Amino acid sequence: MRRFLLALLLASGAAQAAIEVIDDQGQTLRLAQPARRIVSLAPHVTEMLFAAGAGERIVGAVQYSDYPEAAKKIPRVGSYTAVDMEKVAALKPDLVVAWQSGNRDTHLDKLKALGIPVFVNEPRRIDDVAKIVAQLGRLAGTEAVGDAAAQAFRKRHAALAAKYSARPPVRIFYEAWNRPLMTVNGEHLISDVIRLCGGDNVFAKLPMLAPTIDAEAVLAAMPEAIVASGMGESRPEWLDDWRKWTKLPAVAHGNLFFIPPDLIQRHTPRILDGAERLCGQLDEARSRR
Image 1: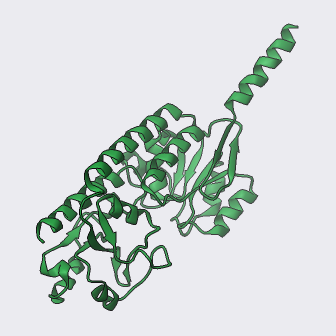
Image 2: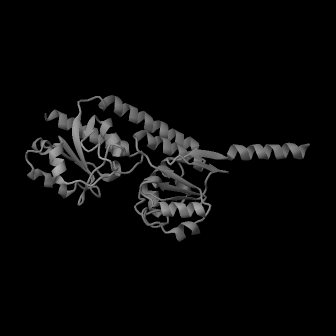
Image 3: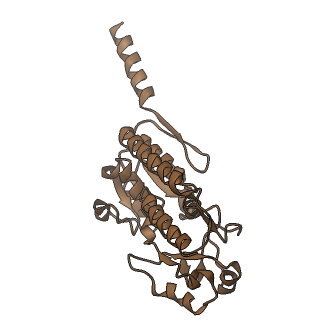
């Protein structure tokens, strides 16, 4: 009888330890127990794993996984577009966290063929960041930390929305890069940040998530503000190239703004830092009308 009860208790514990989540591809991922060896295939994934309390369980990450500071010490497995599959396999991960629009399908298919569980994320709305942080906490067995981080994020998001989202709209062109000239459509997470601040993305209706456009399209759209990111912490010089178009409302009113890319182009809790900057900038634009 004792052996039977012990076996029953062990089976019950195993069932409780099982984890099940649905990723952003709609695939159900099941883990028999929390992941202990995690490979991150995108810089924003690395940052979200740390936010979820799972940073110490990351055994491999791609290039530019540089936040927080501890992320810089994690062994590299290539870049998000060129994953070194041999290095990933050699790390013997029990979970790989991938980025749908950044990683190649062929890489993810190979990992799945090796029997490695793959969780695919693709945040398109601000609240998706909170959802994914909480899911990563579940997968890593750090649910308390992940849930707390998600709750704090949602509270801050709600406060920003209450303050800015109903303000008079500002037509904005977000310049992700200059050569080629690139922006985002209405389905991109950055466009959700623009909406949060009461902005109106002039290229929201384009079909591609990150379309390439030309200067003529920007001139025709007549944005009241232009916001650029570039590559690092410094304001890109090419943002001032628009000054020659003096009839452009963004130029005429001095509304050429900069936000560091890590604060708005990475799908992490820091995106609300970028949102705060953008909301303040759009308020400046409103004050100059």
